Length: 326
Image 1 (cartoon, rainbow, N blue to C red):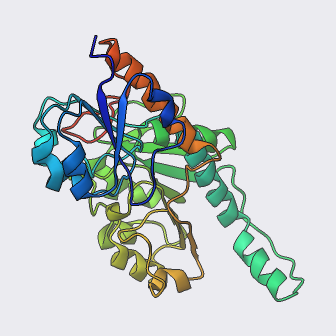
Image 2 (image 1 turned 90 degrees about the vertical axis):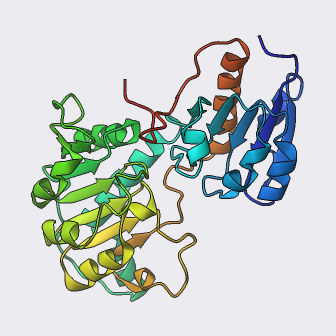
């Protein structure tokens, strides 16, 4: 057992304050909040647990020398790339994440984008704005092929929903492995470019790691079908944005739905905003009503395991940057 009230530091984005639902820990822990590197450096001494709600943070590297007692780092996000600084990656401090919280809603977002493309909802909206009645045909969803790049828990939920509406989902993982009830086949990432031509939709659901950064560039877009659409709900830097813009303008691919970007927020003058075949959302694909409270409760449940000396849930493989599939 740990001491009665171990110190927890919560690293948030500037001005966010204590996450919703986290105050229930006040009776069993000393909570302190930091929202920048200076405050983090001041609060880390003596802290046993660090909970990070700002998935874009760059504060940890600067403040790390002050971490003299850390035993556990938790991220309230699926991606942990911002936390895996060399000092953390090479330490024996476990890192956990929010695996499982966003999976279903992200999958619903992806399926919604696929349906929106096939049924041309954007075209309906444009015709409505013009008060123009124009009958036309749209594409079926059933029977379409979808390649989910990233066969973890989010990717699996995407494949499951796509299969439920009659699509044919396959996956890409670090290594090839047999298909299963959700994926028809799972290819190795090294074979990505050779299988891309076979799919109507390509969904990026992979974490940002050294292996996936810049994974989609000019060669990958040229390998896709001219009528294919890209959906990215993983991380922005997995896609080389300039190459994507060129592919969309040149007709190398037919469209894209993007929830994540190399630069966030996406600047108002960025060319992606003006492309008619691009759907844009603001890194919100998994954010459902009540998500902040759900994240806090997940951390609290894991905190109770930590206090009891039990194995933590959602422990990240720090060498690869994600929680291994069971």
